[in-house]
Figure 1 (cartoon, rainbow, N blue to C red):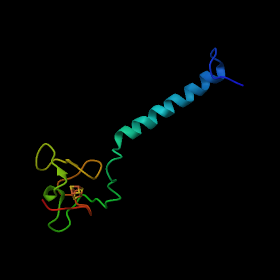
Figure 2 (figure 1 turned 90 degrees about the vertical axis):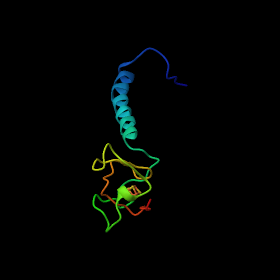
Figure 3 (figure 1 turned 135 degrees about the vertical axis):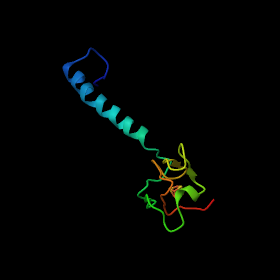
Length: 92
Ligand code: SF4
């Protein structure tokens, strides 16, 4: 039976040199997206209002630094415009 422990070999070094950066980039990508939230596309998020309905009037909106700055949303991932809209809109 072959063990994975032992002195370093050229093959092990090369596998590590290839795998570690790939794993690091995957971990970084996972950190950027919040998997607990829905994607903007799945919620048909748009950066413009739908009539009088817009994110600034939605109970899920988390405001940015001021009234015109983008904020975030409790259920949709990413930067959310106060004048945006999605299908999960619920008036405050
Ligand atoms: S649920 Fe939709 S409409 Fe409401 S704040 Fe989030 S993105 Fe905007």
